[in-house]
Image (cartoon, rainbow, N blue to C red; front, side, top):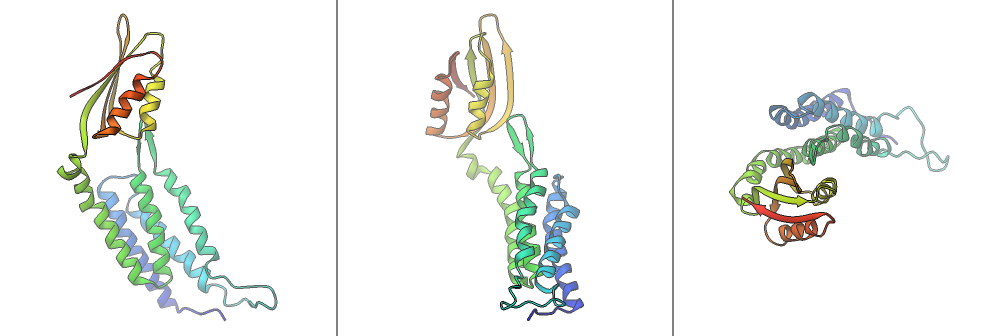
Length: 229
């Protein structure tokens, strides 16, 4: 037997989904991200409605194991997890060696989960998740840019790479890109007897920066690699 839900209960679930996911979207809106208040709210409401329809929208149909037609209240809602990935991909932007929008894409993914929880009537989980996400996007952001993590990376350090004029800089840039370090600026100079590539980046202290220098020095055509402040 398929459970039924009253119209006012549907209204409450959709309003809760809109309010909680809208709070996360407002934070993204204030930071002028690609997906803001309306986008997050629409994702949350849509996920909640899919969940409601998946669980309660089939009361006019007959389901029984004997007839071979089995009711699965999670089948439609489960597709939200897959479908939201396409929307999240639209928020990710690649600019040179850096990638932006990953946090916004992740927030779209999590508001879909919050909307599903609200649509299922699991209000406590939706509320707790919203609080954790807002803390992660707010105070944790300050921690990330503060002194605590600042000691674990060297911001604004420049890596100078000298190459022969016959070799392209693409291989060196590709190796840096593969390390997924944060690149702030790239400068390229063509001198009389060599090429000089200057990359300003953040890299963790210790063995990581040593391995980066060693791997760059091992590339064909690289004459010298050095860190400068």
